[in-house]
Length: 406
Image: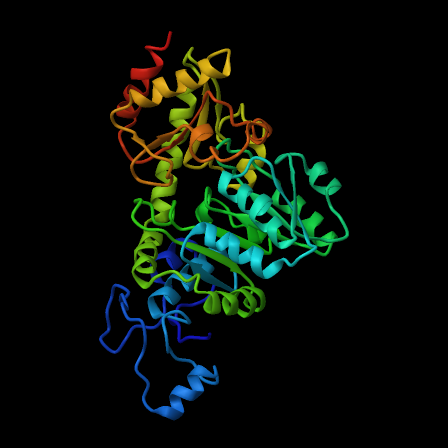
């Protein structure tokens, strides 16, 4: 639905759109975007109501179909991503489900990374199989494997870059070429990097998916998601399905993540710098077997990250503790995590509070051991989403466990 927008000039920087793009102010002239907590909207008369319900004129009728607060968030995120439009969903997984249910049909084929977020793998690999959609999982960084997996019925390539939790990257431009050569679409989950670090549309992606629960909110308050892309596909097809199916983002949650976008650039840049410092420090500890962070020169896709992610490694890192057997690795990882007093032991990420978790038993706990091994998620792996605490305090917090490992 076309709504009246702000009168900002075109070509502004993402940081400016992050604090300025929104629907037009109301007659009250509010400076902070208004929160419209209403399920429906009163119409002037029956004729105008009929025209609006028939989409013959712009206007709001029912919050499941459109709401000014939700529209402000959608417009702001789309501007930051450089796309024509966006639709907001109740969660990040709802955004992925929306893509799957509108782009795919029975008999179609999907190619996805074998090292993505566990819930995404479960949705694409298991749940969509119930509807006749088959998914092939390939190595995240092996472009040749993505190309080799293409079939005549391939309709979607779904990438997450960096991945959760190993921070593996994929070459977005290369995957876009593969997808388009096969007549398929490329969707990129940009939750880990955000539009501050990378804009997948600039590398050829067709759809950008977000979990607004993560960096966009930034303070772990609400659930939210979004899909960005062309008006024809995202608004015309996905928006129509979303409004019928009720996958919508609530106005209150939309207002929270709308305000979260205003500080996104500051937070992402500060947390990325802190993550690089922490990752560099962890590489020197004798009880750390390996650190996974794109900002490190030791990361296999470091050069790609510097080109594709605006020269930054992002806010999330992972590391393997030392150990031999799976049982010992798990025990050692639990030992380090359980002795933290500053970090929050929670599977959420993108928060201003640093979080720490054991992926093999949480975010990837529903996968089979074979799937976890293929994804590289071992029992000794620990994931950290770096927040805004003082670095000395974070290091001391991790040393409580690392220095007491046997």
